[in-house]
Length: 417
Image 1 (cartoon, one colour):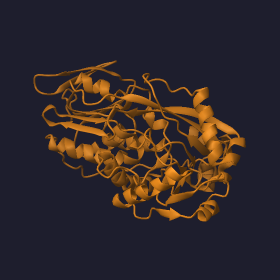
Image 2 (cartoon, rainbow, N blue to C red):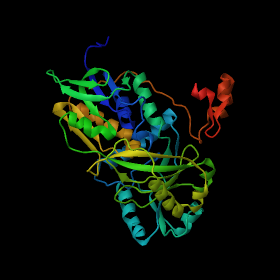
Image 3 (cartoon, rainbow, N blue to C red):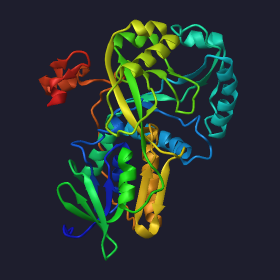
Image 4 (spheres, helix red, strand yellow):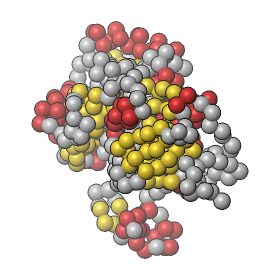
């Protein structure tokens, strides 16, 4: 019988994709853990507004922890997606050069990819490029092909991680903002939230945009988060015929730049912009940002600009003054910070979680694996998978799966219920 008055073994602050992944990883062990989230649901911050790409890590700096996490996370998430039902499509990517400087940069990117172990990255000719992407704008000078890059549903992973964590014993506390943290005489922590005070022996800070705020609560100051706004445009499903691959730009100082990509939902996405801000709540789109996207997109796929726009949105990435992830263990304090996890956090999430739990073990957390770890299966929402409205067996069992409520996305009453 668990003593409810005893402190938790681990408190994870932040239920974005990384925090949920850490909670799921911890749920495999005989521990009492809590996942604390300020919002009303999991994955409602940066996690819900990324570019929905499962990255191979081909272009990461070989010496960066981020690159190592991406390489491992790519393998782990592909396997987890197959087990859980998360929509993934390995459409591949084309890194397109539009001027001589970008063309010259392709050599170095290919060398880095091979050094990172992504050895199938190679050059294709201009003729091959236009064969693969007939709607591509004129003037491209060459490209690298990255066969392993995939598109993924960005919404299901944090839901799957959190669901699996909860069914395996992790407590999830939503609408619970951490306001202050005190270290107690016995070495445990008192986490004062908006609705109660929780005690825990270890803390994992996965607070995303607010990771530096939590870090300061614990007397640490290694990084400062500067929200980097990325605006995106989603085109109607009728535009899907125009794009076969993820079309990547040659990366710049502010990130990977503006791309055009199909989505697992059958749409086409254009973005993101990159704008450093002071406001951690500035998720509105702007006229200037959208205008910039349409200008850049018109060069990549001119025909796309004539298609209907389904939605526009903006996400804030947790950029810091450092280029790499800021995964910092304070073993003596039994505190682990997971800072600076930007848009690659989705692809790297399971590897970050694996690494985080290994670090907690180094700090003295006893890990005894449970005899049973319950798996979960998530609803199929990708266009490449069989949806409920297409499944005679599901409709026969429950007629609501044959009653479509949203005709654009083919969402049935059964799924909503």
